[in-house]
Length: 488
Image (cartoon, rainbow, N blue to C red):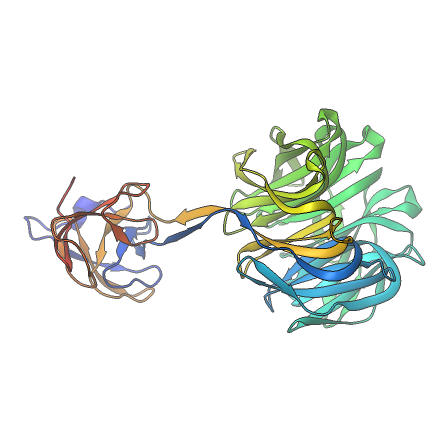
């Protein structure tokens, strides 16, 4: 890292030094020194935890709600069963702030569906919905294309000709394929996997692979972008119903699997998994029957084709049902939604932050006061919010959605990286002058109070009140200048 004292010319004349900008820098803004010797404008923002108002997407009883975010259109897609006719149905949602609105529901199959799972294929820019077909029990899939506030569908294809249950899917960014895992009822309820390839509005499937020769249920799956593997969490009926995980690798249109690893030595239900891309960890949440059915989470680390776990942490000291989880990239937290049986089964969400191999939780927030079941969730990266979809038992079991804002406080400022104030506007990768200690910054500043000491704020503004971290900019000499040689 550049030594700041080396930047100052001999004597007292050191005022401005030319730096290359990493990101655009505005005149009069505080900047930090990066380890590469470049400078970046101080920036950051924050938000308090909150939930928006629930919005109905289906005026009928719904089941098996599964959500996916379409990054191409910036829309949410919720796939579910409409119990008016048991049809497979999908609806497009638009998030704005902490509100969500919905288009008209569209039927993707007139057959009865269950075990629905929706996933976004980044390469094809399509939504893939997989599900259990009621009349046959077979596993099937269909590709959806979002346009505006609606969605259209291609043809249905079969990925499993046996009866399937507990279907889950995740997109593998490295392989540019979707991995589908399910309970194969036609083969002793074994954990089975198949790879899906989307092309246009069609989907094709590779051969089925037994991922674990054991009877399983409560399956969930997530993609670890660092290890470039998928991680599956499930209940292993052949090992005392323990919570178990496996790491899978995609090769072409097939998968291979590592050894099973127990993450909870107790009877578990409602497993959910999400990948924390900031901590490079997988987080699994479940109902732990070995500990009063409390909501419990654990952090997993993938290494090669295996996974190891830290110590389990309770996030709800009551029976928890219908657990779902999504990772909030902006807040760097997982958001766990669940039905809190200890509080009249109200819909509840809690944010957790990973540190090392453990996780800590904030305060739980009720998002629905009625009895809440069939919960699904996804992260809207455009609006930087988590969306939860569920059946609202307090409102005729209608399909309902709500937006969750996790709290965050992001900044690139530390106690030691502030270097000075930009003397001019500098484009990304261009060079420009920065007024550093020993100089007087007088460009791009306004409304300062002469004689007052100013501190750099987390969002890149100046204030006479110190922030956290406390970083002194200098003393104002006039309404438009700061002496950076001042130290408090």
